[in-house]
Length: 257
Image (tube, rainbow, N blue to C red; front, side):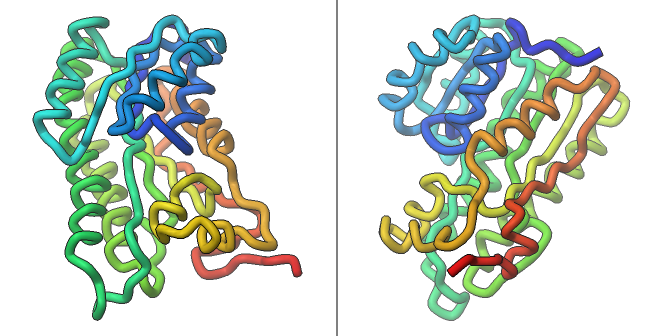
């Protein structure tokens, strides 16, 4: 029997845009109680009424910077103070900064990716796990990337962080074996969100990334997260690799002229 999200408390990091926003919308449509975190709190506040209208039982919006341990603590404490439990943690916060080769790579870009994509995921998961273990139920869903399976030139640190996400997810699954907790990872290919704008810091260059091909949407990836979260309690989806039809690998994309 499918796992119902009705009334379940779903925590989503990086929920102010892109895949995070799409996940919030889709989980709202299935009656979840949403606890949304992001640095851009105003965006979350703007989204809340439409999420309630879509079917969310309740929506809690809080500032969250996963690179700051104190922020992570305040966020999780506030969620637990209001709801007393966390049923699903969607570690979605992440970023890519720059497209430099290693020889000209910038410390600030490397540090931002490592702090957000790796330490941020670990910090939030570490805070949530004791509650899930105590309630003997819970699901951690980590947002990875096909860059966690392949490397490519000018993406050493980003691919490195996503390889780390894959390793962390696997280790966590082993550590939690024998408990009822589930651990999943979703690894998308090209998704048209703010991702490329943040990486390239140029909207025209970001749009060009998707020229001549049809990328995934945030909703496409959100549907994968929903599938993982709604399997029967004895079923764990380890990995979902999802790419647009036009993309066969990190470096192989069909573009129509």
